[in-house]
Image (tube, rainbow, N blue to C red; front, side, top):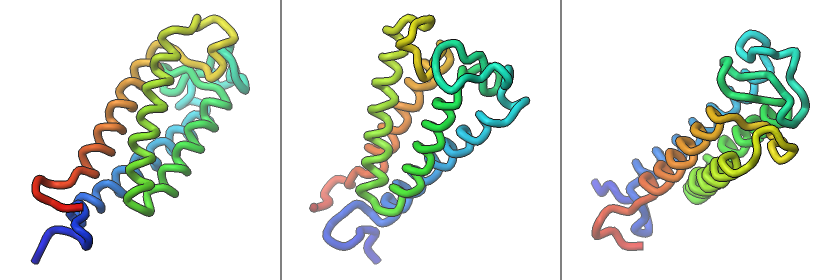
Length: 153
């Protein structure tokens, strides 16, 4: 029995993994968004602002968050779960989302953390997490959507 799906696409197993990876990433973002609204898991919860660098709330006592930051995580999670239904959307979510996180990493490196430009807000821990997320999401999207050598389109 062939391991290839119809029309010479990537093996069905890879497609399953691709969709599952997008779904798992989406669920993790959804979870992080919810956890950002739970006092205790988010330290300095009473000092959380809607947006801006003056939000002193920190998810797990490390990652600076605000209401806007948490909402972005929730939306990213919903998008990942919704886009995990098809191969092309799962790949687009992982690669496109990864690119967005790399842009956010660069943005976090170049802005003044104490300025109005830090509206999400971001801190150094967020910046390095964004680099890892960006590279990881792109890596998953590329690796799991690859066609094996000799496969036709």
